[in-house]
Image (cartoon, rainbow, N blue to C red; front, side, top):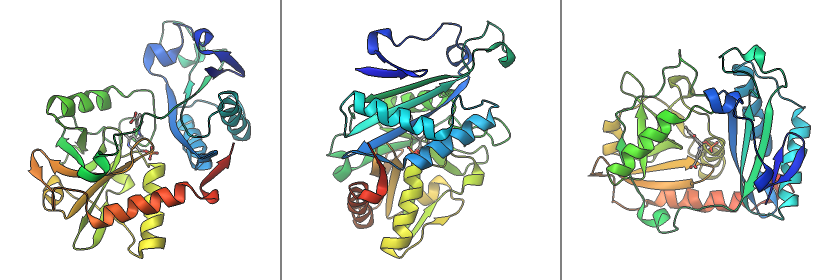
Length: 292
Ligand code: PXG
């Protein structure tokens, strides 16, 4: 396996970064999780735009223009002969000293691109659905580091996911400090009630998922039912007809239980199933990504 590391494709064994990299010392960096389907990198422009915004938010300059990062992603996929893949792009502050001061990271950002085979959720979950819990860990407030920044600080999300695992569930819902649903530890969330589709608004504090955006386009253009961005509490999820999560890894996946309470019929609902079909159709179409 070849890994892209600061301008070079190196063997996995040689893909090493300094222990003084602030990405390791402080989680000081940003990342993207991207998919490639059938020889095309899914919505690569959207991912690189989000990367740039995340980097700007933490005062980190891209080490090269966006077009060059795009070329590096494509090169990495070609070097590994991958047509379907999960791509992890990391941009760290780079090598500094043991202090917090980012000015000490003089060599500039570290750019890493890893392209690997995809570890898919078992197909059965797309039928039977996931179990969710409401996490005891609240979403970061928007006046802390914005949840819209896809930073390397994922410990709260990791702990929320571990909480779900301990409860026998697969994902954890993060509430805002005043109790509104924001998103999950690694996915955005939607629900359907009486034919209306809703998802939390960006301003509540969430990662603006690329899959979320595509699903909103599909709702508007293919279902003729635009998803409404609005605040809601877990109570509305309990009584929803359907709940589904979206993310680059999961795509669109139904959720059928929350804190042990059954949602809707307790299995994937009809609109969720339609959206899964529409999403897969779209992901396989030429317009959905950048050719490798
Ligand atoms: N919210 C959060 C907090 C995320 O981390 C999403 C939503 C969905 O965004 P996209 O752009 O992927 O539709 C994410 C991204 C994993 C994994 O291994 C998933 C993410 C990040 C890191 C790892 O499942 N999800």
